[in-house]
Image 1 (cartoon, rainbow, N blue to C red):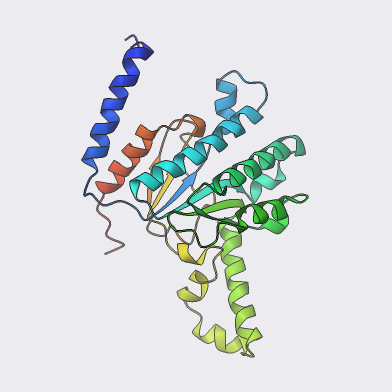
Image 2 (spheres, helix red, strand yellow; image 1 turned 135 degrees about the horizontal axis):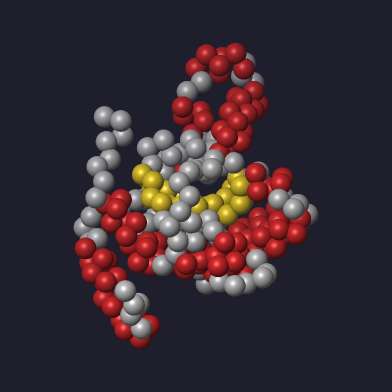
Length: 260
């Protein structure tokens, strides 16, 4: 079957988007969305680019666009998974351009004209050079902004986050003069939840992953215990508003029983 010409396809897609959006009115929607921005390099190769930085740049621009969609949809909190701790083992010629693009993207979404409160989470001390300082400085001015809360996961690993949360719980307890044995005796779920990289995100409602991969790859392991998952076949730079609306429709049609 032949594809419709672009001048016909775009108006039809716009009508379909409006229909999807109107169908979501009054339906449940997630408060915290985690999204795995996967497939930037594969998108660049598919698009004929020889420089993989084109994929990273397109992916960074899409992240900003996505946050706009989430704001319009009334989402309260978004976690963008941009770089895992495992990714830090990539060759320098791959890792350098990726981190540069992440820095540019974080500066963009944290700009003064943006309404979002942004923080960077992960093992920032593992980042090369001055990247940790650059990222922290970029988001410093966003504290206290109302509206959408945005966590940018960089150098992030879910298992490492849980280990760090346990360490912080014991450090806090001992700093107050407590006996570690006492904390062991009463240690509970909340002791980890409130020491996560982002304490306000101790649970996640909905996780989206692009590129067709169907695994978490260590993303929000603690927070995703009862998260709904949604897999999208397209690469991240090609993720469209209509794909987002379909994801929200999928979420709204699910019965969340939380193990009951």
